[in-house]
Length: 332
Image (cartoon, rainbow, N blue to C red):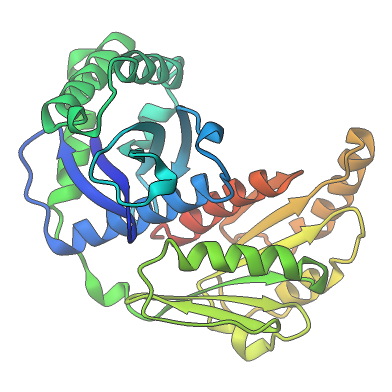
């Protein structure tokens, strides 16, 4: 396991500590990956929290990890006293997040998530100040994680899984494949307000270099990627062919999604495709309409990497979009 500790500073969420199973050197490229993934996760989990009383200690995930298909990430939220906080609204408290990277196989082990959650809740019951979330404290969490894996599997398998993580962290990045990658979120005009608010959330979480917002087409550029949010009436075939991933926002209730079929039918490239769907409240109606949508979609996405999620509220929408973005960023 690797743990990254993020805490709220006056400038926003910052990466405070990185601790792994073994003594590993984290080069700047590796740190940037976790800073990107962690700050985005932090801001999207806590965005919309209007009062400190809304804060709960909770385990989120597993989420895809944006930079390797062999790992997933969990996030644990907590709030503790912090005398260094200058913002008076925070009442000398800080909101923290542990980002925990584990091999994907671990997340599929029966009872793993439940055991991890119980361990974190128990340990944080005794934590009142940010200084207590020390290197030793995080190292003890990793030891407990290893103990859980040994109980659920065995010593040899646990060591092999730990070795996978160390190998990943020590692998030199191939930066030539990480430059100039394009991702897009395509949505109907009815989602304009939802997308505008989501764009604002991304600006507070991504380490971006350039951003532009217009209703028809907005984008955020980081050092390696460009994320475009564009209405379905503004896209062109040339634009679509340049995208590594297409994330479609779909209102299943209205049935106005035939343009997605048309776009995918004309594809000459092979992007990743994700659909984030707003479902009707009536479960029976939702099930039928989803089936109708997916039957039409299935033949269009044949052979393409595909991710699907649904939501019924704004908070759930943010969570599903986070999963879709991290999945889209995962290497082939």
